[in-house]
Length: 449
Image 1 (tube, rainbow, N blue to C red):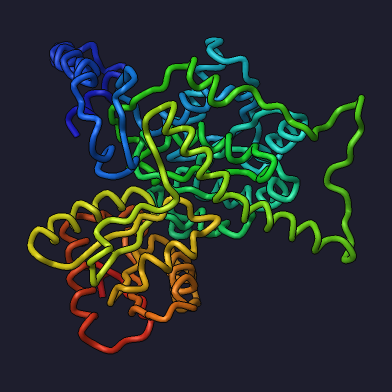
Image 2 (cartoon, rainbow, N blue to C red; image 1 turned 135 degrees about the horizontal axis):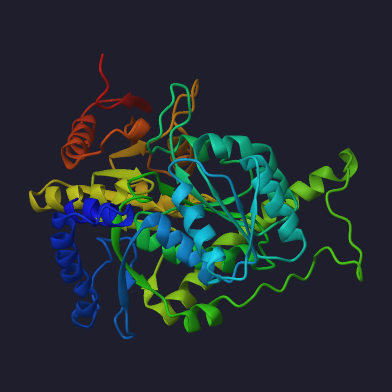
C-alpha cells in the first residue's frame, strides 16, 4: 500500500516536497523490477492463478499501472477507431487516460463527449454499424442508464467492447465494488467476463475484440473488473509489444456496415412473424462463443505466453467442499484453500471467468462429486431463493446423478472486505454443513443483526 500511495502522490503532483523527492528515489528502485523479468521462472501461475501459464520465452517489460490505466493502454493497442464515454466513479480514470492519449496523438481514434452513459452507448452503436471498432467504459448507475441500449447493441450484433468497473447500485448510494450492476444486465445478450487482476484486464481487452468480431459471434463483450480493488490498485503489468498486438488484432474489416455504395437497413421494426427468428440467431451466436473463445485464447497463449480459460478449478479433484466465485475474490479464495489443504482439510475452489455464456456443462462436471458447493455471491436477486450466480450453478447441477448441497453465501456487498479470515470461516461453515441435511440455503456473512 505504501507503493500505491507513493504513486498516487506523484501522479497528483505532490512530488515537490523533500520527502516526495526521497520517495522518488525509492520509486526508481522499484521501477528496476522490470529488469528482473528475464530471471523469472516460466512455470507457475500469474498472480496465483489468474492466467494459467506465463512464459518468458519472449522479452517482457513490466510497467507499474493501475487496472484502469492498463485497460486504457489495451484499448489503444487494440486499434480502436472510436471512444465515447461519460465519467463515473470508479471508471473515470479509464476514459481520462484515453482522452489524454487521444489529445497527445498517440491514437487516431475519435473521442466523442456526450451528456450521459445512455448517449455514450448509443454513439458506440452508431460507430460500430459504420464499420468502426468502438470502445466505452462505465460503472454502476451509468450501466443502469445504458440498460436500454445494451439490448440494442446486442440485437444489432455490434461487437463493442466495454470495460465495466463493477460497483454497487443505489440506494443507499455506495461507490465501492460489488457485482450488482452487471448482474442486472446479465440477460442483455452481452458476452461477460470477470477478471481477477489488472494483468487479466489488460489481456482481455485485446482478446475480447477478437471474440466479439468473429463472424460466428458478432456480439458485444463486457470486461468486468471489481471497482477500486482492480481499477485503482497498481501492479506490474507485462505489456505486449505493439508489433505483436497489431498482428494479433489487425484493424476491423466489417463485412456488413452502413455504406452509401451498398445500402443496408439496420434496426427495422420486426413484427411477431419474424422476431423469434432474430432472437434465436442471437442465442445461436452465444452458443458459438465457447469454440471461438478457446481458439482465441490458444492463439493468444502462443504469441504472448499467457493462457486463459473460461473456468479455473483448484483442488476440486479430491475436495469435499468448494467455493465458486467471480472476480478479484478468486485469488484470495485459492490462497485460503491452499493453506487449508496443507492442514489436511478437503477444500477447493472454482473461479468462473466467463459468466455469459455460462459454462453449465463444465461447472456441473467439476462440482457434482463435492459434498457441499458454496457460491460466493456479490450481488442479490431480491425475492429469489438464491443470488444470480447460485441460480446458474444450481441449474448446472440439476441433471447430474450426484446432487451436492448448495450454500449460497452473500458477502462483499458495497465493497465490504473479503479477508482471508472471513473466507476461511466460509470454508469451515461448508465443512460443517456437509454433516447436516439441508436444501439450497442463502446466508449473509458478516452482517450485523
